[in-house]
Image 1 (tube, chains in turn purple, green):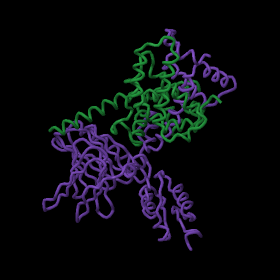
Image 2 (image 1 turned 180 degrees about the vertical axis):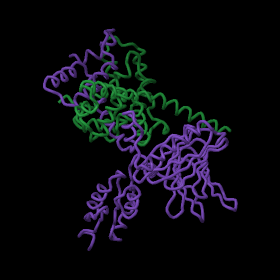
Image 3 (image 1 turned 60 degrees about the horizontal axis):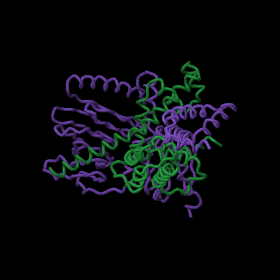
Length: 337
Length: 193
């Protein structure tokens, strides 16, 4: 049988088709399958596959890569990929933002020339953007967030003016990376962490890699809390909490937004609605307090509140009413009693 | 049916593709002479593609390592001339640890990040057709019309894009290993400091 002989022939010194060549043909077949095969192509594919057992594997692998690439869609930056692919300028959510883009471009050019400067970066509602900084660090801004970056010879200073951001910091021991969020300070050398400003003034810090120091810049010298990877802490105007270790699931949930996902790990429906409303113009409204207190689980696309509301209605037995830009979830029979 | 079902391809994409860098890294260290890593990988995928069902596989990682080990022993058995070295090497490979240090495993998010970076790094002509197909969900015919190129060129660029993605997803193994090594060296230095 051809299949068996192909495996042992290598040992006998008979040259057989290299695996790389099979991969090339497999990739071509996957693209042809995607556009549709006619009858003669179908039979030549079958013939090709029968020629060597490895070919089925190569085809399966190529199809996995093809299908797997769909997952990159959850990145909101698809627009950027497309535009840069066509050789045009990046697309921004609003005309205001494109003006900001020009400003960013100019200040970055200035920064490159000057060595340091301040740059403002912002996202519109529902937008998640990843932006490189001059030193190789990266900042990923969540929905409706704003930072200003000023790189000085001795410090890399980033002010989180509102919202939430993930920082992937390039190593530079001589030039610490400091995030200011109100009077809370987070200092890192080379690490990755998330800072979120809550509406009530609290600042939440979650570390995914490395270690950071957190303290509050107040009139009285305050204690410095050292936060290692996998921990989270909350700084409020009154106090600063000790590090709390997160489970893997919680840590995944904390960074889910970066890929456009909202992870509802046993949060209440009311919380979940507030979270969706951070990302969308359409507002999710939970009319009933009893319903709002119900716990929900699951991972949802941040930009698709309709799907979330439908799923919540199905999970908790309610129904959805649409009123303009409001998606109202009302209790159904099963909850009212 | 010779074509792998979308469902199976998705299962492979979720459970096996992300393991590939570490699986290849392990294979490079333990493979008996006379066998090729790429061949074994393709053969392992073939086994997984031919399974009637994968729903019963609760531990894809253990499963795929098992498959590869079995393939190696089949090769040894089938070889006309079996060298003692090869048998010894194979025995060693079966006992080598396949446990991976935590820092070498990419999280789902890092994986997406990597995938995204690979797509963003494709050569322009390949990237444009790939992005139009995958992100805009446009049929190849429509892409050809919009870009005013032949359907054959779309097909060529698309398969080149897919090939590059396949290559990138496997070659990052070495980078990841180096990264893990660096991480360990740094950690050691920090401990000693």
